[in-house]
Length: 475
Image 1 (cartoon, rainbow, N blue to C red):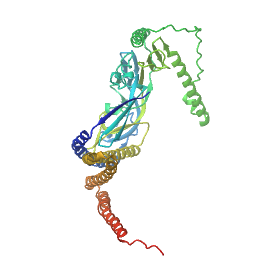
Image 2 (image 1 turned 120 degrees about the vertical axis):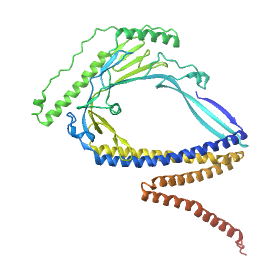
Image 3 (image 1 turned 180 degrees about the vertical axis):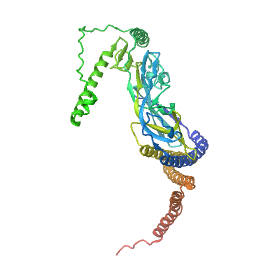
Image 4 (image 1 turned 90 degrees about the vertical axis):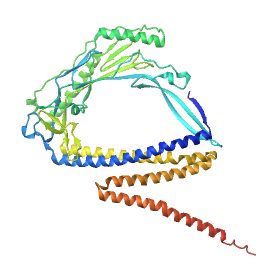
């Protein structure tokens, strides 16, 4: 059942808070303006840098062989990113030859959600009703339930164990005949599950400590679990027939496609069997595939259960666009000082990479534009919000006036934003800047002058209606 808290704020307090908000409104207005100005300059410089890089890069035909003639050149090439480094998660004794290994941790917890409703009352008071609801969810860190508002849910959270998340990266990652810098190979996203091979003694230690934590949180329980003992059935591996590539090359394409399809199914079955063999169940700790679960029943989680997922970044084909620097790479520096280097998954041409970067730059541009405009409008509402608050003694009138203030702040905020954007682009894009200034001027004219003419027209109609004689009744 939902839990509610109701608070009442007096008229004097509300007016005082609205005057205090004026300073915050000015700060938001300035920050929004600065964000718009900076964003436009950033977008233009990035676009110019990408245009320059798009005209400067050369294709690296064979990354597996160093080419001295490419020293200092911006190149684009595709090769396998590989490593010989072995990484180890010392806490769990798990290792793999991989570019990266990562440990993700989740906790099953009660989570508090709130929904607030505000209502104005005659005389200027405001009644705030906050409704709190609670759900069980998997979250990335334990939640302190003693801070929950509903007493019925306070101190209901617990955890069977706390484990830090961890991520390790290889020190040496090769790309053909070259070595990738850390900033490049951290972009590789070819994540796969790590099949666990945790020592039996370590699992038993985890099980014992988890049982103690469970009993502290939930009390002593009957831990006897009746299982029907069945003799282990031997798992028959699917038959595999290795066909040399030299023979495959002589076969028709349709036959090769069918063979590849059969091989894919076989590999999938082998992986499922390996996962089944890798599954280990103790009473409070369960291991399956790349997940280590702390709790009684993984399929029916209880508050306090913990699951740890292990992943690795494996070698993969990637495309690099950067400047050759000896046996490694460094960022490309454009004439305007902007730097650029990237790594993308799979095989891509230089033109495709540049086009993708331009699309990303455009998306960021518009996202920050919208954010800046919203901040400016919010700042203006904060500055002039006290006018609406003063009239809150009569909520109906305050609502109408507040709606008008909101419209004015929105129009003024958009007009101001267009002016800022136009001025920021004036040096870089004169034609576009002039168009934006023209739009802003048109909005000002419509709002300031046409609105005044419309008011005069309405006033004149009202006056004519008053002076017009009433029709005489026919005799």
